[in-house]
Amino acid sequence: MSGRLAGQSALVTGSGRGFGRSIALRLAADGAAVTLVSRSVGELEAVAEEIRAAGGKAAVAAADVSDPDQVKAACDIARTAHGAPSILVSNAGVPWPFGPVWDTDIEKWWKAESIHIRAPYLLMRNLMPDMIAAKRGRVICISAIATRLTLPYLSAYSVGKAALNKLVEMAAEEARPHNVQVFAVEPGFVITQLAEDTYADPDARKWMPHMLTYLDEGRGREDADADLHRTAERCAVLAAGDYDILSGRYMELPDPIDDWKKAAEYAAEMEPN
Image (cartoon, rainbow, N blue to C red; front, side):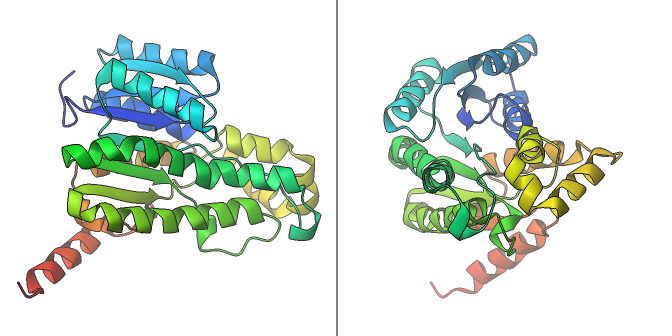
């Protein structure tokens, strides 16, 4: 398949549904050979068939992205199928546990952090060495608006995504001399399975009734799926290199990234040689 990403290999986690699926389909439509990763093989195979039916290339790797051995195996599948990935989209996430810090389940809270922080670290640890060696690569981590808001009873999610943004900043700065870029993207609002899981969670219903009202309102929006496509578009232009100068940044969908780009380019021109 031809396109701006033709010849590139991409790995997308959480790609069996929701934002991950939309991103994977868009990268494939732009020509990337995509390796789909999540724990649900059935969902991944369905997305892979969509990609292949449209003339694209797709491989499937079932994995718990918080497990080092399973992440390595998934990355090896990607290398074997399509070559070392030059594009990584770390998308997996969980909303739980809900409740006050002093009343949440210890193991469940820490498990959430393993998905929000350990998983993208493991993926970077496995794939960035190839990118560094090739002097080409782009890493996109799906973050959350909760990183800049104080949302009571959502501590694991908020803290984990905030830490993810800092990981992105650090990795971007360290990889800058090697022409590898790293970004954090807030994906907007869509009633995905993560949102449905929140809606059905007894602790969410107890501690966050306002969130359930927000989800109810979201179901009735005429453009309920619009942010799926906007997020996929944002990831596609980042993967293509249009905004490399913004490496390290956290971006929300309404952000004026074209203005940011112009300002960054101007600042770079003004720097003394």
